[in-house]
Length: 359
Image (cartoon, rainbow, N blue to C red):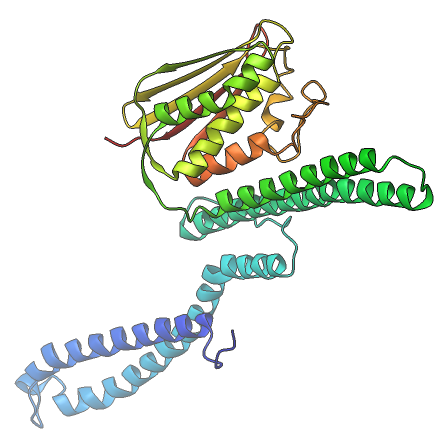
């Protein structure tokens, strides 16, 4: 944004200091004139014939007062310029850091030393903002790179299949169509997941009063055939837990969690438990499942886009695109909630979603 040139903050502070000293000096001289000189007799003999009269005092006092005023003005300008420079030095460092951030360098930090004051508080907040911005940009760059890779894979497979079909006219077209259909379905699922993830991040959805217990029952009813097919026991318990948000997004959140718990489970005799409850002003959704033991260092990365973990990769029709928990995290964040993941000691995963509750 282009602005008209004006006085610098340092010059304004300097003029303010000098002006303040000049006004203070003038007031002091006025006090002396008003409360001292007016009691001096204005006659040729002075007081009792031995003290100087007002005329002589004025002639003696006026030049000294003028010199003092000039000295105060010069002292105010010089001292104000030095003090303003020292006071505004932190702003110079912050301006340089902001300019570097504007040019794309987010790794620079001010790290201002000294005791706490307004400038150092501002510098610390600026450093914290730069750190969060750098982390967010890095996350977005990783996401874009992973999304490009995931989208390129089905397209590359489709092109390979088409090249093989063009060169080999004897190849079974039915098999080719089925494989192309599967690859195209995966690409569509990935695109829809990316769109849903973007929608959740924007957080501009319509909010209404939602009961998480009803959402959990609906998601469980939808996924019950999948659980029965895999021999998984699906259990929904709990009480009413109301929050405000998008029914569609919250249903997708619970569905992703339950489907993830069903798919990443034991081969035989696994269980999935979905529980809802209200704690004061917080509505809680808990989803836990049996399964293999998860390394503690793996669990925090599961909510990142395209992070599946070698122990949780599926090769069947429910392999997914690695965005299930990332979408859940995005929806929870858009609803001002928190998502906690923890490995169960006996194996499997415990997921806790906390959302702001409503009466």
